[in-house]
Image (cartoon, rainbow over all chains, first blue to last red; front, side, top):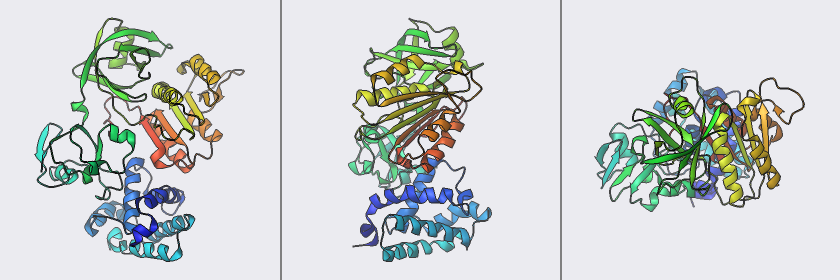
Length: 120
Length: 327
């Protein structure tokens, strides 16, 4: 069984997205990158991100991620912010009772996007 | 491989998904995952055969209205997609033009043949071919066979001045079919419903509340209507009566400006009062209608108070000249 199925698939994404996004909005290290974005659009983006991080179906290329985050990089997005997001993701999964070994796998997938997200 | 019509243009899909077809033609359809999960590419089909895969994961209300996920839609036969210019139009008679207060008129229209709607949806009303505005439906299907719109007087407003100064019983008007997702969703009769509105945002909210009650909703229903002053409130007696009739329905009128003592009005903005009374909204469904700034700020606030993103329905009343909200 793949990671996505083991985590619970789309249902897991839906359970996680609200908790994760609330943490992000309350995290003063990173919330400035999320304000002013329409909530509907944010919901889509967060679901897409979580689906990918959970090892689920995703058709976004590294180039898409570079382009999508370029304006944030210009606003100062850096490694510390990326780390904060992954930290919130881990905390979300812990809250949902996900096993540490699975959380580690999710973090590893998220890590593969660092260079593209930060335009490095 | 099929034909797709969007904004007056005809495209061949040539085996591509609806999303890829439209994007390749320069239409900026949002998308987040291209995998049928994030809901970003939702568009509405107004006619055609919808393949089942195109609606996977969508709720009953969205399915019934013909919404699809464009990234998951591989049309096998022609589809016509929705946009404001393709909304069907109906002609009907004004039955009555009733003053609900100095500032709000209730326009009662005969319900046209074949006009389907749900409480809380929106129609366009045309004053002339070049001038239309959106209004929410304030009545329930079956409310005496009438459609009802609440129109607030807008200084210099093209539609509202027509409604206030000219339109009367017996006049013919043109309106669009009903559309919108701000409706009561059955299936969870015990959950809490929080409805917060300003001005004529009350129109869809009281309709949704009454619709919920009519469908046997048993969970708490809390409706907060806010205005700067007492003159901006309306339907107070009717909503107080509804509270008396239904133990689970609660109506609170809120005044954000200075008010005289000794009345039953809450002091403060409707959204503030609502969040003070309900600091934990996990498991609740929230409807927000009216002033765009209120709707936007309150969406975030109720989300942080625990309401799930998928259970927050927002209908900002944008002033004329703004881009319409996405379908």
